[in-house]
Length: 346
DNA sequence: AACCCGGGGAG
DNA sequence: CTCCCAGGGTT
Image 1 (cartoon, rainbow, N blue to C red):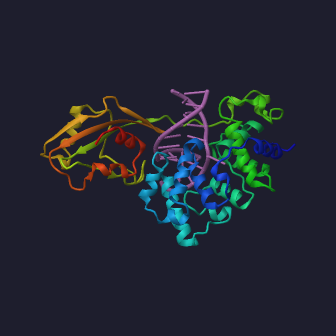
Image 2 (image 1 turned 90 degrees about the vertical axis):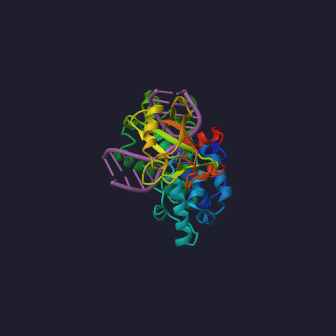
Image 3 (image 1 turned 135 degrees about the vertical axis):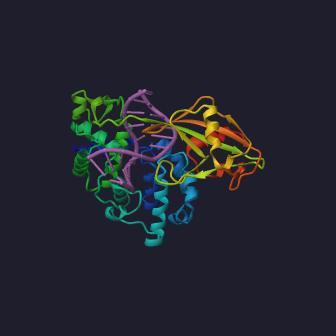
């Protein structure tokens, strides 16, 4: 039996029922694929439901404000996905009369759609023979064929893409693509897969040679850096506080936050007091500072750990541009801020 | 080719 | 703790 036949047979028996498997409408497939980038199904599923309900068509999505889209995305991470999603929706509506591109090459022109996503949509919606290569595919192929090329190298990317393109069932690329990924997610799991029930256990290189744990090979990432964040939660007499929109290129672009003082190390009450005295809003004014969280809240990202303190600053004057505390929860914020807002009783 | 971008869950 | 996730954009 061929690799493809064994795989798709396994898939026909073991696949999960998921909402985006009930359709080939490119809008829904695209939505699901963007949401599922670097995101597990369990985490992404509720967001998919929310987006489909709130924006039932690409026209609804295109018509929304970016902040609304970011708000719905809040907590999923990699917020450039949400910004690109919105931009691509506007592009499809404004330039393509609301009709999605119908092939790999044109799908690539959408913001946020790269090789993987274009291949997924082209194969699932239009039966184009375009092999997908994601984390699951890397794992399945590296183990089955015994490939030690690092998957996060350009050489590895090419090698696995070529191999997947050779293996794909040209008669049913949609099923093949989804089958490899589902197989990687359910059977050929990253850790301690049950190879005794695997349909490939008589031909898999890694199983035969007892090297499941060594594959796939990945180049180690650099060590995580530490950052120290001090958020300033102002409280004014008229029940307002200050939120700023993050500008520029970095993390959490276009999301909102409390005014931030970044420091080399965790600040003491005294050190923060000194910093505050240099701020224009507080110069020569009365204010009272208290630390909300005694222990630093550590927010862990892939490459940095954010040691965070929230400082409550009560002032006896009103601040221009401040917003009512009752509206705070309407703004899209990083989950680090969102958790604080939820716990803090304004 | 290297680096940046979140957050959650499994083991 | 460490590792992984149905990746893409920018430089």
